Length: 233
Image (cartoon, one colour):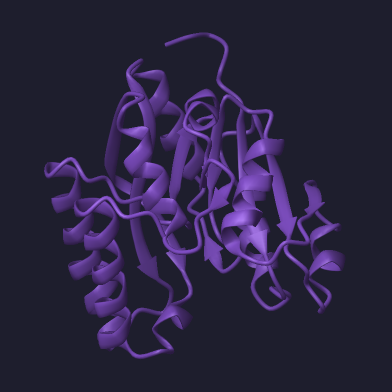
């Protein structure tokens, strides 16, 4: 292992996340790996999100164009780390999250991307079933089929590989759906992408507010369209 550790830039897009963002930032401040910066991309918050964020050691960058694809792209472009890690405002990261990410890249020179499982906070009922069984199995299967599926709260890429594939856009067109998955599909030509079975992120189950079955159907439809039919969205 190199004596000089790689630097990480953690990118978090936010839009009116005053209720969630502080727990995320606290979890990052407790990381065992210390060579990192935090970039919070404000996508037009109207609450006191920015006030909360500015109390922490991070860079705050405005992105007036509405949409998570625009926000992630802006944050990734501003990153100075050799590794860029992605998470979301409603997500809590274990203390060894960054250490596991960095070790993955340090021990595999062919690696351009790594991703892990998403677990819902306060998991019960459908949230428990989806996050700990269905979605984790889905991610493992994708890896075997060479269709890696990044998910916004928990993945990381090499900065130079991200730049090589133009990030979360195709030419001047920014992805409007599943920008994380579409990035993963492009990165396959740059090198190896790995699913880390012990790399976990704990996120809000609010994504199930639309209904668990609809959530599963919508994401499955987008996945099949992008990963197997090659359609840009």
